[in-house]
Amino acid sequence: MRGAAIILAGWLVAGAAGAQGGGHGMHDYMRLYSVQGSFEDVRDDLELAITGRGIKINNIAYIGRMLARTAREVGATRQVFVEAQAFEFCSATVSRATMEANPHNIVFCPYVIAVYVLPEEPDRVYIAYRRPELVGDAASRRALAAVDKLLADIVAEVVQ
Image (cartoon, rainbow, N blue to C red; front, top):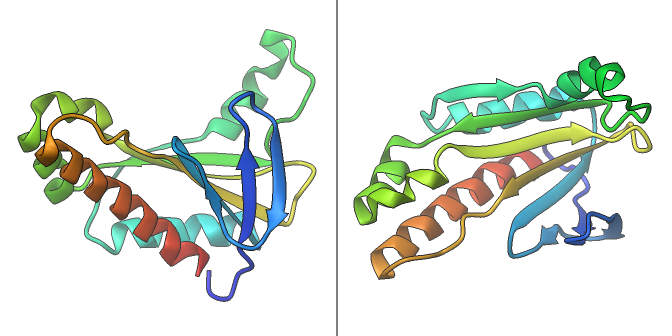
């Protein structure tokens, strides 16, 4: 999404969310961005940013729909999202390097990038991903840093 305003959005570990001006959310465990626009446009831009790299999306989790569908059964009354989806995918080259460095790094695949809209901010679309922890020996840490870079590059393409 070209020319979109990027907003710093901070999430505390306790789960509170807030927004500040200028930049993007930088936390050890996640990256969180937001842009002005429609969910459909940002979602489509994210899909193109992933598939444009020759990466196949394995699954799209319709998290917002699931929460809305199951709200009555669990006694919930609060609408969490207007819309929320999570794209699950792996990169053949990056994933292979990660698992060749350490086969136990399989737990880092698939990668997930979420895109969602909150009811109180219907014109703001959030994009977030969980960062891989850089663990293991030097080769493993380098490979996991490449995963983090891939995710950052995909999201940067969407929010630029």
